[in-house]
Length: 293
Image (cartoon, rainbow, N blue to C red):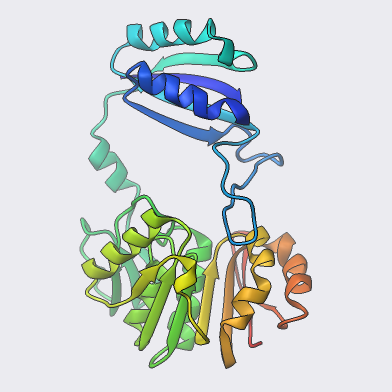
């Protein structure tokens, strides 16, 4: 298998992807060419914000082909097209043969939330000390328990308890926080996301874990909740401040994650008209912020 890598501006991503599909690429993926630098961008699609874009200002497009000849033929054909102007060929490289299933599985070991609460992929046996377990395999939606923001939210659920509560997981991704709330006795759980794939993922993961939740698009969120969880990113969290706070019942808890330490003051300022946010947990440069509006 061979990988063809291309650099292109945001406006060329869709045309380039369609052309690669027509050239029989086995798969096409798009990455931020400036990932892990100060120029890294996040793409959003939350209420009140523009819909998610097709790519980043500088996008790296990666296409897989069965043979080197097919990859190089595709590169030659693309370079003479008018729409390729502004794009750049980064190269063609062999992709080592691997047992991809075993490789993927090896990257996802059980994740400790607390000594008694673990996230365990289905191919692992739960640790001996695990009393609460979420079974979750990597998938299309964010949230496998490996990211600090997810772990902090789950720790908060485990330590503060949501037994008998009405809980909203806003931006649910895989549904991991909603499932965690179910594990700790929440009475009614609504899990919402703008991505239909995430909604289906949350439903599937809930069924696999034998818990009940109500997954849907954001307009399903209805009324007030004892606990509102939102593990997104700082920019959409700021835009969503009035909406999220309006969903918190009197005396209830607002729990926010996806926030870098340096962004904490921005979030406090954005939420000041509605609630007093405080940092409740930190891990690897990320913070968990909570409030009782």
